[in-house]
Image 1 (cartoon, rainbow, N blue to C red):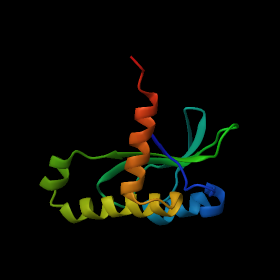
Image 2: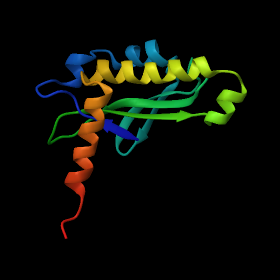
Image 3: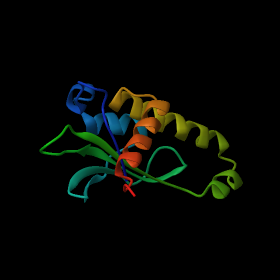
Image 4: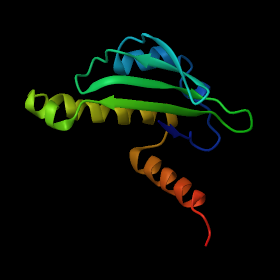
Length: 127
């Protein structure tokens, strides 16, 4: 499960007022919700894209700080996707993930990677 921050001064509710509908427009019908790490996330059991097996996505709400978007993409193994001749679906899957996260966070892939890298560096113990 990964959690992504919004841009400074922005909130998830402002960027995506109807999170469930947005998830459905990118990935397929939401089958229900599931609790993960104390957050209620939407579950897409049968995503439209053949690369995904299951998707969890939703707001990670915290009382002391801004909400984040929490996502977990369960994907089929690359060998299986290629053997099934679904390379186009793999390209589309990458685009769908990036477009969804850009809409939700306002940050492109490079910016999200740098932010995650900084969080890891901040958590590193001092010796």
